[in-house]
Image 1 (tube, rainbow, N blue to C red):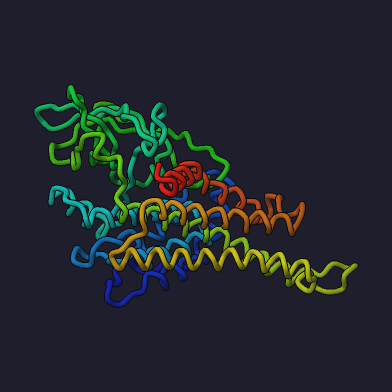
Image 2 (cartoon, rainbow, N blue to C red; image 1 turned 180 degrees about the vertical axis):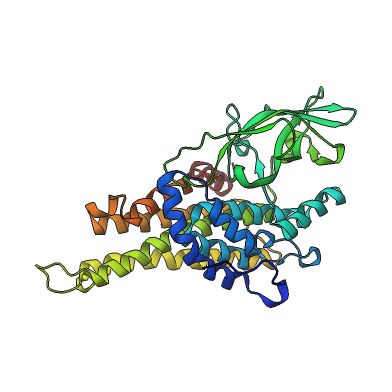
Length: 387
């Protein structure tokens, strides 16, 4: 089977239909990549060939111009088959959606957009550091941008850099070396001298996401590649639209993992007929109730994701605290669905020969992504109590 051609134009293709066509291609690749701990390069090559790297690049720039509702459906569909590759695409979609609204230097923005359209080039933010952790919890990055006559020299180390092997550019979170440092993003070509990837990713779940360390050793970039310097305090309040995109696509991904587990479970329960029962497991009331509970959780997820996406596309994104609550609720529901499937199947569900084992490992990664549960609850509680 081959992926749909990237030469199809935005006018005559449906990104969700493309994702559905890709899913059966990606699913066996995902299982093999997970077992070998190998980067999802083949899956992402198929995604790139299908044109989905330009999913949220504006149509005026040659992209598909997808809003959040379409992007959410694409990510969720692909995540049922290959969540690691879907995560790389989700980050691509978030950053190009953000870039379409940003006031970056025109040349830099246009090059990133054109490369996504013409070459299927991927981009992701490189933010997390060994000492800082996630910048969402505050603090200055140790990655430093020093002014030189030719532009900027960037030095630092980034960890958990999702999709590192396929990235054409990294949006590096850095601080200036000024007396009063500014903080912001620097566009760094991953092929630039001084950039190297250390293959450190050996994880429980999403093993094929290639979230390795990226080391930057005095990497030279032009002046205009520093696209958004601000005082640190100016980054304290998240942009509601960007946060809605980030939380909704992450939640869509893990909801996709849960739907994959539920789909496998339904088939198993319908087909499995123990000798002592003489009928399929699906005929048992306790099994029907357990499956019904998971259907309830997935229905809640579906409503939350569609509502958040529709509101954001209409120009009224959920408030910052609510976006976090949506992500937390959807992902915790997803975890409960997969755990419920494993519990219902019993010991075979934890066999490495059973896809439920992989779905369980993958869905647990939901708790790691920003915003994390404790921060979400704290923000909501403070807001409710007027603290």
